[in-house]
Image (tube, rainbow, N blue to C red; front, side, top):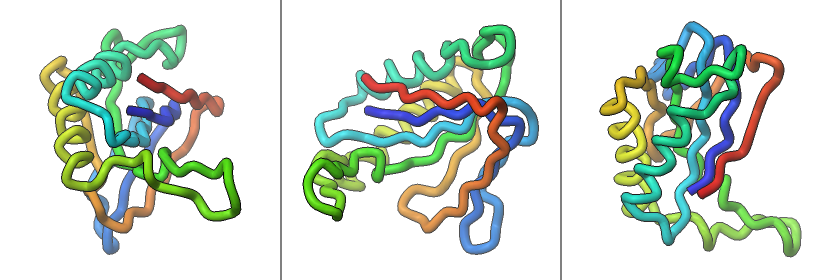
Length: 141
């Protein structure tokens, strides 16, 4: 499982002209990719890592501040561009495997008390964000 995590002052996801998820205060935008070998245990560990990640102001986390997260599924994080000019998607999980694991990360975050908004799985999404810093990290398990 892999995530690109950006510290943001606000972020939103639009699908077919409707905002389906948004945070309007400082928090994290999480672009989340699922590998074909990932399991429910990976989802649990990713949620724990995201919740406790100390990249907010003054080295704080969503866990310590209550800051929100916007989680957006992003299979393209597993695009392999080492050969040729066209990415290979063989490492990315198939949708029927990935969707439950993305949902598991979101559910685990919510069980920890996090405020979580989401995109819509398999939808054509427009993601908007105002990066803070900018401060962006890659989280891999």
